[in-house]
Amino acid sequence: MSYIAYLTHGGGPLPLLNDPGHRELVASLRELAAVAPTPKAILLVSAHWEASPVSLTGHPSPSLIHDYYGFPEAAYSLRYPVPGQPALAERARALLEDAGVPASVDQERGLDHGVFVPLSLMYPAADVPVVEMSVHSSLEPALHRRLGAALAPLLNDGVALIGSGSSFHNMAVLMGRDRSPAALEANRAFEDWLRDTLAEPGLSTLERGRRLDQWRAASGGAFAHPREEHLMPALVCAGAAGDRPGRVFAGRMGAANVSSVLWV
Image (cartoon, rainbow, N blue to C red; front, side, top):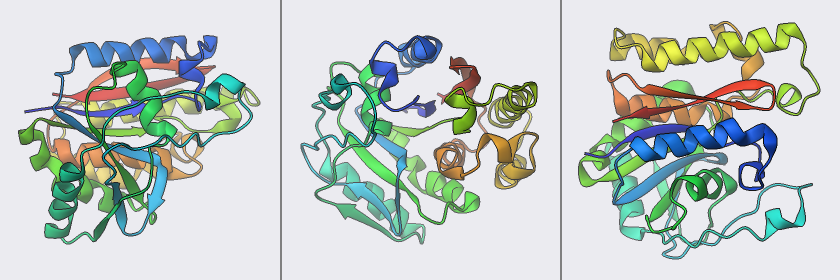
């Protein structure tokens, strides 16, 4: 049995550039990796790839996509020479299709920073094969929980299922333009709600799913995620975890509280 993890991957390449505002986030990701079992391979759902149908990378030696701008030159020379695993991509596609979810394998696409930034911190040797998966372009919550449930059998094969996004993704706060008391309170409120939803042992699969599907109604929800793509990987993870509660690893990104969650 492997593990499931939802990661807050930070602002672009900054976690790899010794940015002071990301020190706590970097420490939390390394702490999570230290207690998670080493997987045979990783299927990583990235918030930075939206597709319909859901798509997976199938290249055996994927390139990197430096999908950010305005950063120091070093950000564009970052490397993470991790192997792909086409057989895993096909296995995941088949599981999704069997669950009634159309899926495809992209033989050319590389890995975006939602993949190589957190994995560079967690597995710096780049020796665990990785397949990236998109979120669905509908960004529909229940569908993303279905994706996770369909992919759960991979855990029995030693594959880690990772969702990479951000527990809080209001860019005005993250970039320091809004540090008002109301903004920081909304950040804290949504982090508390997300922690309770993903880590409360008393919640049933049904109740956890209901809460996640209605995330916008949570205190601070719409403020925390003006657009929901960075939250959708968490719903994939929750769908795979079922009624298992997660363990929260708290961090900070600038002035904002952020978190990652591990299920083992």
